[in-house]
Image: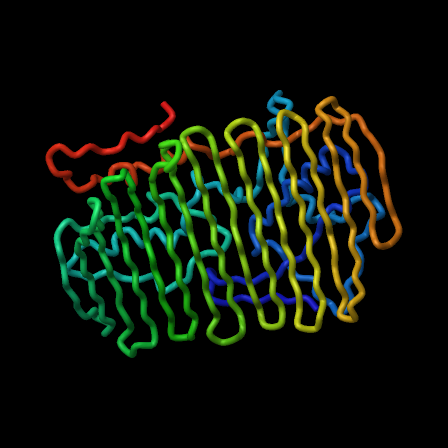
Length: 420
């Protein structure tokens, strides 16, 4: 049973997961990289195979990736470094924050608060899936300097309000915020959006947005975005963290999705990135989790775990993990599915990289197949994040420009180590 559903117009599209993966049968170097870098960058590109009978992935050519899906895998080329690979992607990278852009409709966001006499307006649309974490400039946050409380009625009968203010607290805590919202003339649709910036005397700074809404069809959504600067309590090293959470629900049927994204960076090169996703369309549900961790000294860990199920009992999934340091490391993974009758099929695989062009590849499946061999092969992996500390500092100018409250005479601000 193939399902193709569209909801929430262009912003709420559902395509369910089809787990097409490598079977791990001693693939070539290029095939392995295509497999090990699968990140499910867009669920909207993934279709669902959810028939009552779940069949094993074909193994004839040592790869379960069909010809049409191979075209979507990332291509790569070596940049003459043994441990680094530059990927050339035909679609968005999972954390391509520097290249993130909203859709053309979203550009209408910028003039919403000017001129003030006209009142703010909402797009009345849910967030877009699989877009990661936006840069601060894409939000166009423009906070008012004075306290404002105003409201009005538009020509179409819809109403709006806007207010702003400041909150103060201990240790120099200061929050400047602007909140705006509105509803249609009959109350069937409504939206709220809040912007803020925070700081205190510890050097903490935060920039954020929260928005929610619903429309006349019963669709509802919520989204929040935060960017913050603080210091590590042990090392005093500066750290920047970015997070985004998004969710939407269809009003006319049992359909919805949720995503949480995070990125963490410090001035010494430590980096962590990850996401959790969930979605449902009537009788089918899917999940995805993945992460990346770089310690700043050459050690890297990456992992993915994704699975899906139907109400009739079909389940399928795929997961993999890789760990490397100075050319030595390992990859391992599993592909599996369970039929409605409870019959389980799985294939596990692994690689051991010894740093001397020798790679031990092994695996087995519940069909009785197995392999165990050593091949001559170079080791490829990303020893550094493609988007790191220097990039996030360059994209966080509004966050870094937040001024703390004036400290009493004689006070001392902490000195954050930016790694310079």
